[in-house]
Image: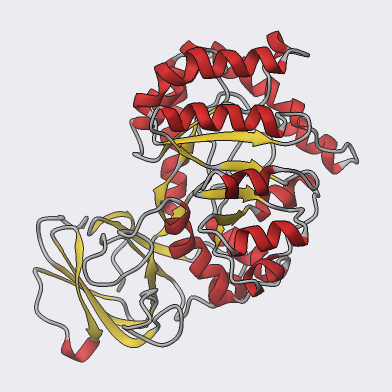
Length: 399
């Protein structure tokens, strides 16, 4: 039975409840044992001990399973056509990653009609939900003409309110060697047309993509049209992405695999979130970011899956949590917080990423007694049920 959002639902007999509300439980995750949570009118209406749970229209016995806030995926490239499996195989055979592979996806995306693009987004969104993601950001960036970026934004907008205009992904083939001209066209033509259909403006500030000056021009043009900046930066080597993101008050700077002491100081003194994308580093054999240095400096960290056809063809945040614990040396608590509340911070949202009273009733249940099993049992499909706005959208009722 799929829950009806107009009816109240109590999840009871929860083994471990992660609230991300320190006032509701133990530690940063606000953990409660033997707990219950009530959803009503799409929101969290009550949190407490199972034996004190109020009566609700629907009662779901969690049989000692863990319940967490839904994952918040703050970095995804889902509007595309085609795939690049052969490129992945070449990298695994020793070919270094370079940003140029994006151009193959640009060609396939331009050739696809809207229905085909939407079907692919729907497939990947459904996959994301099944792995526990209840909020998913979605970028453009594989169209790279005004018409194709506009239709990419419109397709993304069918599935999420968190649409990012990434027109400045790489210079497209027809602008090879003329990145300045492409940036001028993006600022003059693309952004004014696409901005009404997006929330965020993003840029790939990286060697092989765009310089600091070009990136700043794109971000400032987007900001002039009401878009909020975020930055792809410091993925392939040290660079200006982190500094630019902090200077412009970006919501996040994403990848940050290579940071200097100055970058860490800048982030620590700002509200910009460092979004780590370990699946991309896994799939490119790139260096993993130094999460410990970021966390120890007090920087807010988010975890994203970075689903895209070239460098991270996964929608699984549970996989990324396991990578973060094993390879980035994050604790399980830090990794879970970063995939939920951290992702919400990167999207400047306070209504998702937690199970405090008044938050949106987005949650997931694990076939395990604790969130620790997300790293303890890597690769196992532990997500049993997913609720969004109090409605069960994936999985089955626990029994």
